[in-house]
Each structure stands twice: as C-alpha cells, then as structure tokens.
Length: 324
Image 1 (cartoon, rainbow, N blue to C red):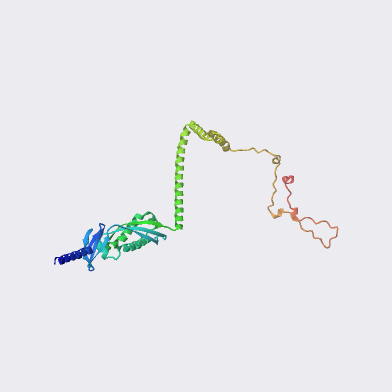
Image 2: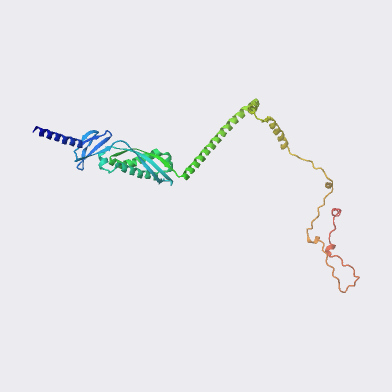
C-alpha cells in the first residue's frame, strides 16, 4: 500500500514537473512577451524574467524592443530638376508597443522596409539635386515624418533616418566639376583684381611720399639694385634717372608748341607776270570760217574769197595778250 502511494506521488510529481517545464518561459531583458490564449490576445504583456503559460493552450510571442538598424536598398529616381540619381539610406526604429507589433501587422520589419523605400522615392521626386547634396538634414526630417506616420499604428517608432549616399551619372559629375572649376577661377580673378587695386592705392601713396622727398626714390633704387645683385646671375642693371626723362619731355614741349613759319624765297618765275587767257563769253567771239564754194561761171583766175563778216568784226587782242 505504501509502495503504491509512493509510486503515485512520484508519478504526480513527474507530471507536475513536466507540466511546469512545458509552461515555463524566460523573457530576456530587451524583450517583451505577448500571450495568445486559444488565439485571443491576453491583455497583460509579460515583463522580462521567468513567466508561466498554460501548456498547449497559451502561445507566447517574444518581441525585441531594441533599436533596429535597417538599411534601405538604393532607389533610383528623377529629381525635380530632371536629374537621374541613385540614393540609399538607413532607418533606425524600435518597437514601443509589443501587442500592436504582433496584432496590427504581420511582419513589422518588412513593413517598415517597404515604407522606407517608397518614402525615399517620393522624397527624391520632390527635391532638387542641390538639396540632396547639401541640405540633407531637412530631407532626413521629412523622410522620418513620412515613415513614422503609418508606423505609429504598428507599435513602431522611427528613431532616425539618414541618407547615406547619392550616386550621380558620370556626365553630371564632369559637369559639376567644370562648374566648380569655373567658379574657383572666377573667385581667383576677383581676388587678384582686388589685390591689384589695393596695391595700386598703396603705390600711389608711396609715390606721393617719394615726391616730397626725392632722396627716397634714390634709396629705393639702391635697394632694388641690392636685391637684384643678391642673386647669382649675369643681370646688368643700369639705373636711368627719371628726372632726365622729365627734363627732356619739358624741353620738347616748347619746341612742339611754337608754330613753324618758313619764308618763301622769290623765284625767277614769280617775277614774270602771268596772263590768264580770257575765256570767250559769247558765240560771236569765236571766229567762224565759211567753206569756199566755187562758182560755176567764175574763171580759174578768180580772186580768193574774203573772210566772213564775223571774222572781220573780231576784236584785236590787247597788248598783254600779244605779249603772252
């Protein structure tokens, strides 16, 4: 009898131990346990540590509450200024409500990944290339807001979103390199022109000081000669005083200002009076000669025909004309 009781007690203890072992669960510190009893959600969420469930009745699902780092695959799109780019990002998120992460969505990690990809394509189409390259903080905030809005209903909180890399076509890279080179050259020219302006002002001030003290110019000339002679070369320096050039310039100014008048020497031809021909004013002044028409009845020894009346009335030339 005693042996039967002992055997029964041992069997009960064994069954109890098997039951405890079947229902015993351990939840880690970074996890939370969600219990489904006969398919229905239990209201309480199991905290970290040792916990018990009903074997074959309850089902415990553990949810990781740590921050998950999820890389977003590179997405290719066209920016607002019609530039094809390829952008990839990384998303940091964590679960804040374990029950919603189990009940509201089938796989919250896959859902967050797909939402991040679509949001990244959308943010590429709404942005310019300059914003993608230089204004990433604003884009990160907008991308985080776009992903976090639907994720709150899944019990997931988006901690941070970062755009990692922006890949450009080779032609666009060359164009940007040429633009940057032209901009640097422009700034170099502006700086050089500014330096020339400042140097010219300083030289003008130095010239004003040296004009008051002529010996300063000689000292500066000697300093230049010493600087040139310090180098081991075959340069020959011949100082030429500037005052001599100014003296020559002042000497040439009166000579160029005075008018030059040369006397006209009388020639032998000028002593002879020149007589201009008198142009005839009327047609009667021109002598006309009538043709000689032989008369049929006149003999061969007829006297010559006399001149026309116009020739008879021709005026005699004046004395100057005869001398001419």
